[in-house]
Image 1 (tube, one colour):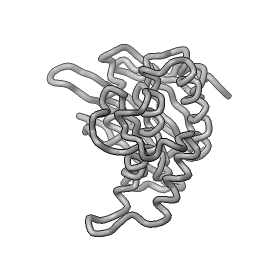
Image 2 (cartoon, rainbow, N blue to C red):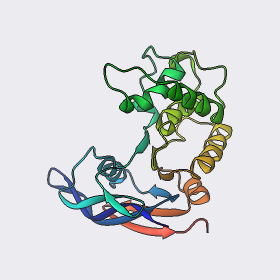
Image 3 (cartoon, rainbow, N blue to C red):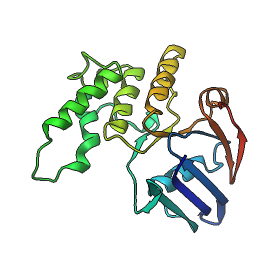
Length: 221
């Protein structure tokens, strides 16, 4: 497998406190990495560094495409449920379509193929019939799938999920992981979760992050 992300000796601080130190990690095509660890151990900081939302104090992040170094790659992101403003007046299909906003300029409209791609994602995620429904009218599981659709609509090389099974019942959680198995055929996945048993069951590799990073388990061959 070819690498798509390399983190080289990453250090990060909040004030005088070390959050991450000496973290090196390689993500390959079609990888499924689960990240577990204690609250405050640096999981979210590591995720934000990969997303480019934080700059490390020391170290570097490299991206690759077809084995060649590139400036950036397409990354999809599903935030924590409690970061989603459910009162914002927007329909489900508009949320998914917004995942393609980077493709158009202020003066250009979405293209026919963009709307077709949204239809494909709606079908893939089992959201037919909910396209026009406001996000505040959706159940927790439906809302998670809508924002998952936003994250995957642009065919990302990597999908990052931050505690995606929060507020999901067991059935909703199982549906989510079944979808992730499908998505993993096209995209590498980085799953940040406190649910160690679910991570070990579904991820191909597991990393424990508590200031440092330790690979602790190959859950699946």
